[in-house]
Amino acid sequence: MFISAGCGRGSGTKAGIGRAERFVSFPLYWVGPRFEKWDLTTIEGLNRPRGFVSFIYGTCTPRGGEQPSCTPPFEIQISPLCSQLDVVAFALVWKRRRVRGAPIGRNPDGAPLLFTRRIKVKVYRGEGSDAGLPLRVLHALRSINDVPPVIGSEGIIPPPRTAVLEGGRPCRT
Image 1 (tube, one colour):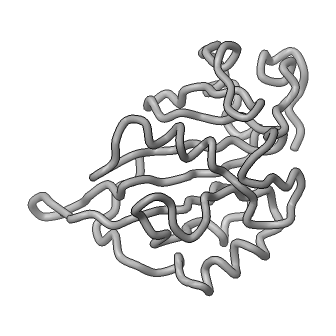
Image 2: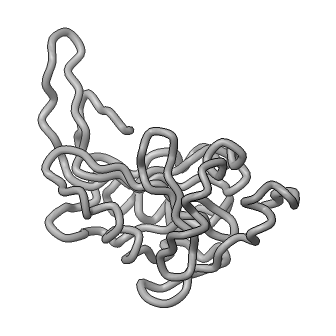
């Protein structure tokens, strides 16, 4: 889960969105500059082409002693499909659950995890959000960059091959 000491504004601005639109390493999916009552406040990881990118929505109030921290209302974290796939696909819940055609699993920390043809999308929830928020976010995903597969806010999200998730076929992105 994302924990921030400041939860301030920054790269969720127009400049950060512009950088995300030009990101070419893998597809990036988001829910727009505002979702429900939360504005996009930060985009992290755009300088890590092989790591993960996070879209953080809303603000929170840091609490605690020497190193106060907080958890923003929600974070969408995108990473390449093959990154730690054996760990996150191990629990076979993804065989029974789908959103817009793509299988949904659970990250070891409990966050829902959407498997797509090229990426994984995790949604973490925090302060001021409800338990249903992660699934609403997954249903509303759309592309911010032009890296295929490009998706709109409705329609099918291309899933990975089942054999890749099962470990019977090598993962290549």
